Length: 284
Image (cartoon, rainbow, N blue to C red; front, side, top):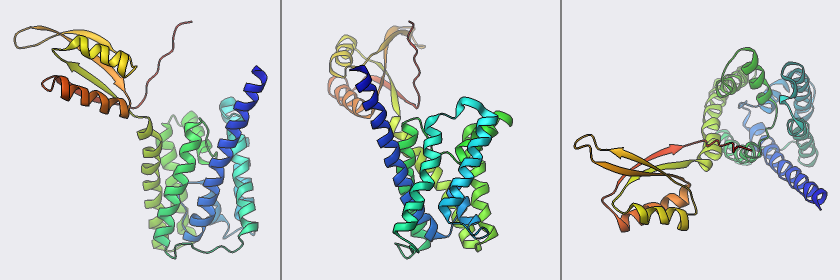
């Protein structure tokens, strides 16, 4: 039974990663390639190199990813797991399939700007699925990890720097407009991707001082099915001792909590903080 469950989980994971890569490949082939821009990806660099190398984009992307994987394994060791290998090699395969099914595919929108916009939106969906499964599409992620290890650069900055270098490579073959669109596309791609990945997981840390402390505690535990911490606090003006309830909630729980407080104690003192990451390792 355990083997079946494990196999089912692996099969589900592979299916999700494959679907995400299909979305990314479609975004590259149907929007990035016709836009004649190079937006922060190995595929974008491949589009530029295709003007100098007599190979299709899928073959160039495969070669670049394989070279980066080899360098990554030698420099960073086991940081590159099976998921990175799988995604790095499957993406160019999907591109090759699309090249065969839709040869000489032109712009679907008829506008370079709209192609860039559509690419950013569609590829962000695929990348967010990968990142939320603790995977990536390889390519520049490998470059960023190498820069992080040897140049001691933060991963986010390393990704931005490598992405901008790819965007500026458009100057080798395209006009000024394409270069500007590549740079702007790289910038906005990062913003949209942050929204898809991080905003979806944002939580709120709500701190409440209320006259109805016990009722609120019961509401958090029994209605929101969440946890809370209670601290003793003192007002600076008259040193009156009060108790502050602190809880961390998601978007839906936050709305329910605020509705409850507006109804039960609209004069409560409430402060709210954004929480982007929660780490807890229980003792064994």
